[in-house]
Image 1 (tube, rainbow, N blue to C red):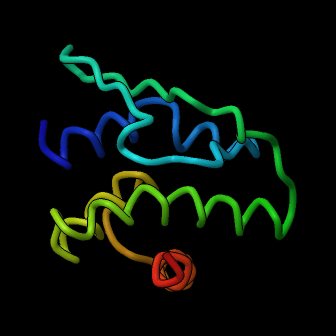
Image 2: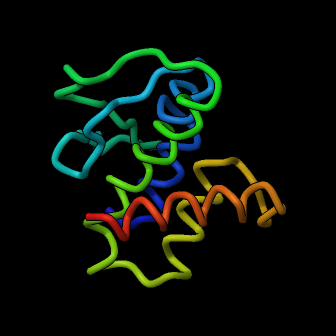
Length: 114
């Protein structure tokens, strides 16, 4: 399955919605995703014992951390352009707004710490 298909599944399903409701997985990586072979594919999150609801600045940080964990492993497989496309699918955007640039800088700063 391509990153675009997985990104579309994120767009259509749970991850953005979970973050929008204040829940963060806590250990989001590719091993903790199950993706159905259906059309459209559905993403299932597993192994979320660290997951919980967050608010305010902690929610912003945890959201960025979830995405950083997910993109950490993707760096060796996806180009910067592909990771940006994934992020845009996740955010349900066609282009990168200024707030999105700030978020990407946060995500990449967290990713650099790994």
